[in-house]
Image (cartoon, rainbow, N blue to C red):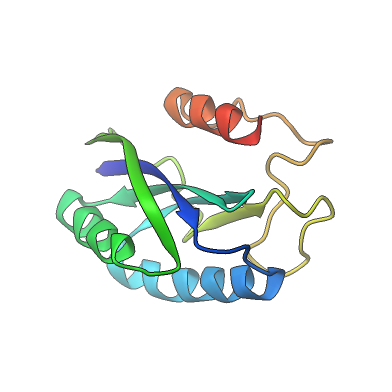
Amino acid sequence: MYHIIYMSTAVRRFSGEELEALLTISRRNNPAWGVTGLLLYKDFSFLQVLEGEQATVEKLYSKIVQDNRHYGCTVFIREPILAREFADWSMGFRDLDRSNGHASEGFNDILQADKTDISGFPRKVRAFMKIFVA
């Protein structure tokens, strides 16, 4: 197993509907790629963790970098891992700009003000999540 943790900047603010469409596509395609992960959005910025087989994750990341809806992809971590940390999530997601969140399938309450226990996440992922939500 392998993961990449990166951040990028959206070219413009994404609406809730646009984020939901992005999540729907990810949740449809990622199982076919054998990829799981986490996507956070806040203040025009994305933080994403992709995990799976190294060649697949690298190929998917190369495709993501070419997406013209964002720019400035910066990889913070690119390394082998012992096991998936997000095995149950084809793509966990949270829009941190919208305090009330979404009720749509796949949108979850991670990092909501009243649900800040992220102790179950890997140490490196927790560090980036804390920086990202600050």
